Image (tube, rainbow, N blue to C red; front, side, top):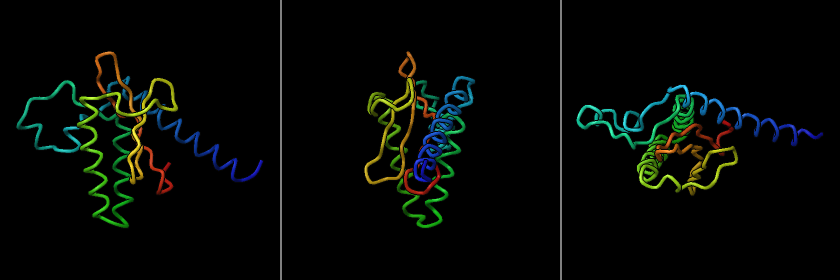
Length: 142
């Protein structure tokens, strides 16, 4: 097989592993509420919203790594990407089916136009959204 095929298989396998790790962490209860990630002061002022999306801990780390990498080249773009993701998560709270059917079983994927981010998430029986992986198509972080 050519190097390109091996590289593509490795890339896809890394993404599958990221999603699987996020799903396992979510099932084990290792999640971070979106409100804590995007507005830590809001937690002190308002009661927790049970419908607020959450991040599995590996996905939260993925997002932090991706934003950090973007910030190395452009702090302004990193802030924009972070804000766009935060705004979209608020929409997911109300419309969990916003993303398309995911490539991985029982997941959905939300790709961002003109942004290097794809959120892979699950929706439980109570319509609770949990982001299980954050994939980056631009920076070689997948």
